[in-house]
Image (cartoon, rainbow, N blue to C red; front, top):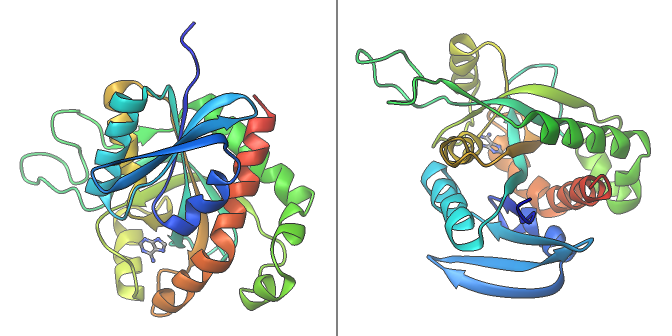
Length: 254
Ligand code: ADE
């Protein structure tokens, strides 16, 4: 059997810093403006990297993880803006299907269809999705975040009873900051729960290389006129703690 080597990505430094602190025997190497942190978590070889923003940045980073670091699976933890009105800041979405909302090669093919792949959605690996969902549910059930995050910060974002959602995530090279953008996406893709800028690009690369992947997103903002205010402070105060607790629990299932 192939040796397990886990890749973990986040799109912001704050999203990965807690996860990097879990690495034993941590070493780092730089390539193409990225720093790859290698080590072990619970004895399993792991590489953690901050990808930078957007589909191109994410795609090149995951390709490097596959070619240079020989990862055998990929986990992405980060934040997203809510599209479904049931989602609140602090909820977590585990992506069942990933779609590139800005892919549009009409009239040559259907809107959102990825050229030459004959595919519109990329599915997360079923067993990774199951593990991620169990971990998020456990963390919420045990209120683990209450000990990891200052009460003041949780109050500031009115995070009282965060919920787990499993469903569609849309990615594209746009930061959503208006109800109009939100409504437009919702009209085109009514099943989409949240929006971000990397997941479906990572999903495409992993699909092409047959690497199992799972995308986990914490809701940082409502993808509306306040999103540019909520997003940075959420990322700074809260996102890293969510990512760390989720990853810790996932490793406890290996
Ligand atoms: N990631 C977090 N919030 C986002 C938003 N509002 N738009 C796109 N990506 C995001």
